[in-house]
Length: 561
Figure 1 (cartoon, helix red, strand yellow):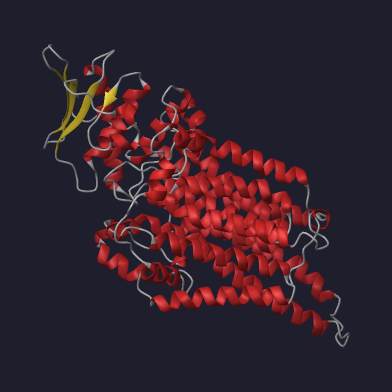
Figure 2 (figure 1 turned 90 degrees about the vertical axis):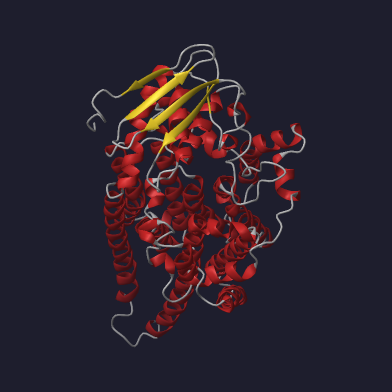
């Protein structure tokens, strides 16, 4: 059995402190390298990242966001639903104000590093170096097989997936009875739930399930409890959920009411949800392999679905049954750490299955990026099985060696306490190096991404030169772009740069992603961005009642800086 050690016991030797430091460095390295690689290759807010940066910039304005990102996981007729809360925008507000170009990137990277650190500390608290090693390895594997998470951490589906790691780790502690981690659980679960609707059910279900488990264990000895931790958790919940509650009670209808009571029509159902779960918990889970999303390398949605939704849905049912069986058996045997891990994994799997099943049938294609939710859930299930198997092996070995018939009876536990953590630290470092190299390589190997960022850098100053001052104007694009670059994403990126400069840029398609403050104004001035066949770019401004003015780059695109 994995022992529930005290903090003093865990930190009693310098080697264990160094192992702890190594695990933290391993978990943080992929996100540090990803941010550095992005900045080195002229990263700037583009598309949805520009929308997030815009909303974060507006936190310190009269247009402060009170709802989450505009969601495309629901049909938009009859209202414009948003995700549950704006906490990501609020957390990134200071970085974006300090650095409007890269703040949303390094700010989100810091959030991910903090999330992984919280997961490592929580896992260390409940299961020592083994638990912390699993948490660090999960973060590294996530980046190795899904490198976009480290290269675009500001995108809310990716930030939500990273936030599930500390949600599960702190829930593991709380479910085992350590209420000191309840504030951390509230913070991590709230951020995950507000990042995207698909994370809301697993995060909240795991959080409430862990708290219920702690309450039921309240009379057991050795459980940390105290009213201060409950008070801190309540204050954290009030702070994190104040904005969406204010919006709900000051609008008719509020965003929460829209999400709760709107009709979504035909739903995806439980079959694809269970198939996806099985694909990420089977003997060769997909979280161990890089999965090509549609559009990447010519992959079609049919080919993507065949990989992600390939297994039988009955296999997903078997996964749930196995997790429930591990939980019940550990509960009967009073194996608290194993039972708590199994409970978290089971609730995470149930919540994720429900969330995917509730997607509208015509929005199932969103799994091309929402599949990232299965990464932490699948790894949580595997970690549970690993901890359960290790508990059996350790218990059996102890009984065998305790008979005293072997001269190494005393040496065996000592070697285990020394060699196992060292092996974990070495494996974590190897994974961190691999994850960092993958993130760096992907950052420089996408020509469409490079061209999109170059166009943003070239067109934004041209648009600023012809844009009218002191009045709203409509920004639009004319010309042919590569299929991988959306005109709406380019317009959003340039409009954000103009917004930071104090210009009142509006645009048509996609304005709801930011909010009513960007609603197009009828009869307003216009700024047209153009890309010609030869690669020349220009911007034309047509203020009301004044002649149009066109500016272009004199000698084609400037050299890359």
